[in-house]
Length: 47
Image (tube, rainbow, N blue to C red; front, side, top):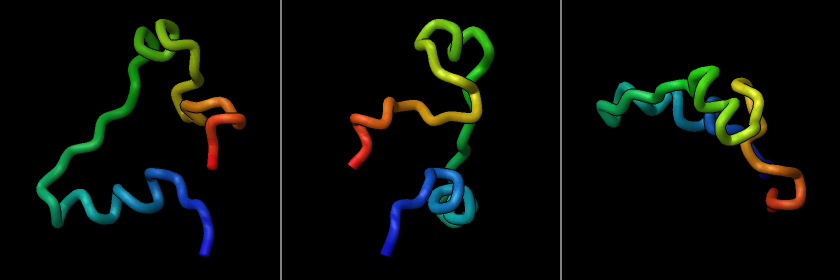
């Protein structure tokens, strides 16, 4: 058992679920202060 990133879990399932995942734009990442490739939470938020 382990922790997996959203890409490894959600992207393979998106077609089955008829979902579309988007990526953050440069404007979004600048506003919330995270890199576009992640991680999106500080390590102390991870569980």
